[in-house]
Length: 405
Ligand SMILES: Cc1ncc(C[n+]2csc(CCOP(=O)(O)OP(=O)(O)O)c2C)c(N)n1
Ligand SMILES: [Mg+2]
Image 1: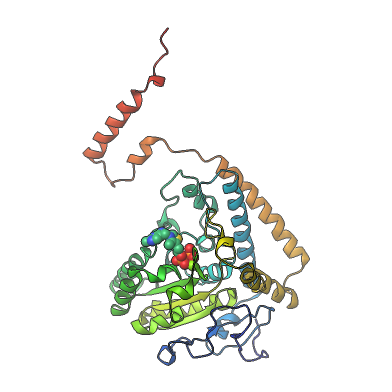
Image 2: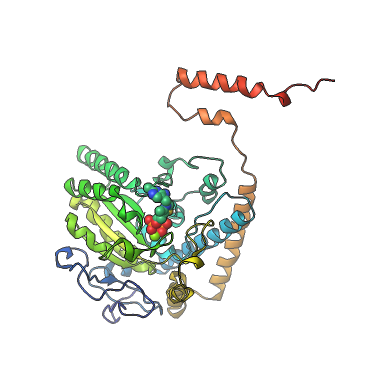
């Protein structure tokens, strides 16, 4: 990506239809001290019109993205949106208990996920399907829990992608504790590659006490953790402005580490900012807070009806900021992708969705004995005793006997 002849960065802070813009300031990395409470700059490298912008801090990361990487970012965003549509359809057809859509947040998730190294460790919420894809998780495994056949669905150790956490913000202290452990391991063994954790959370979860405790600990111990807040403007039906009087990124200042607001619908900027933050954390400089400014284009879950609490005009205003559209515009204008590329993606997406459906329909409900495994690492007499009781109990039902004449 050649950034030499591009205009200076002019993040479009006063654009109509972008609620939450609070004017220009200096909240960029390393300049946390200069950020004033009510104002924050927003890092943007790719405008909604698909134009690349320059940036003295983050432009270098964007410049490293070649044609393959840029097409890859688009492919990931497209794939996970198609996955989201199929999961929603499966729920509507009664094959999943519930679904948590991510549409609109693909830029924030793919951009940050693709900035990670294999040795880093992710602590997700319940909506990070795009990050799961970047970690190499088999996508159908994400649906096991939503089909009600598993309490988890995958082994986190295989991809360094932790199980989904439904208790808001509970994963933040976990991520900090894990990061503190990692820094001790790195100190004990200098051969280990630098590693960091990424703790994902939402604008609503930012009100939880766990976030405060996690950030205090992370700052006190210079833990290698990146707090990645997806500000999608809603906590179910509660808008972000009810939860915070200042931009969320500015809260980092109170803890003493950098806070950066990035255009969460700009996958190039999210990727660059997250790379910067991870390098900062892995090098022993302590935590970073990233606020990805994005929008939940769909419902909170399939059990929610957003028409009850938000205006369709607001939803429409964000359609023009769609993370997929702006990268498509850039790829086409730069001659990096044509109709054949996008047609092939649509075909691959359909094949993925067909396979996903087949895998989900083949998922079997677990037997009751499965509830007794994975409780302890080794056999435990009490668990064995309870299992024996339940076996006798199950065997005692009339329909397990031969009918009598
Ligand atoms: C501790 C806790 N309180 C309340 C809830 C119920 N709840 C589930 S999701 C949600 C809103 C979360 O909003 P946000 O953090 O912005 O994440 P988003 O769903 O927008 O991704 C709430 C209140 C919960 N799961 N856990
Ligand atoms: Mg939210």
